[in-house]
Length: 215
Image (cartoon, rainbow, N blue to C red; front, side):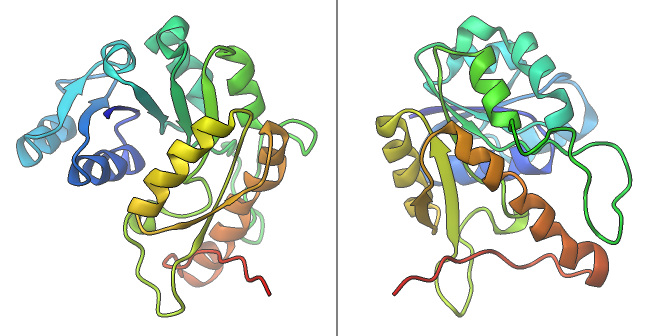
């Protein structure tokens, strides 16, 4: 597939390299293609194309939204809302506010009555948005290795076919997938970011992931 990554930070770069490693034609979207860090990335990963947000959204068959949650709406507007139509969009964002954590607990700018994913889906109604990769750090997004076995990635979205495609990607990336249902389930999935970050802020432990145990 042609994969477009909107966002060139650590998460975007990690996922771009992962998709390219799996044989996908990949473009990394950035606001500034001449930025030193982006030039370095391109030199180190010549198989990955670099473009603007709009170029990346046009190029992609599947788009990965991997920007800070606070600028997600702006990034979509910059990329061009119509460029997401009839495409799967993997939403990696979390609605983290700029306020400092309290006892290791992040602040969100959303409530439990509406997730950031729901807002994103409303902005690009003709895209099939699927929540994924939002409950783990970028270092464990691709081929996570735990002695207890494969960790669980929780996903949700309104389009079942899109979720099947994302599940196939997650399987290739080394995850087991649990489909939590429609877009409203993001109200529960996004706060897992808070839970995941607490051991990091309190104990500098950032190498964990979640697993759903079933009998």
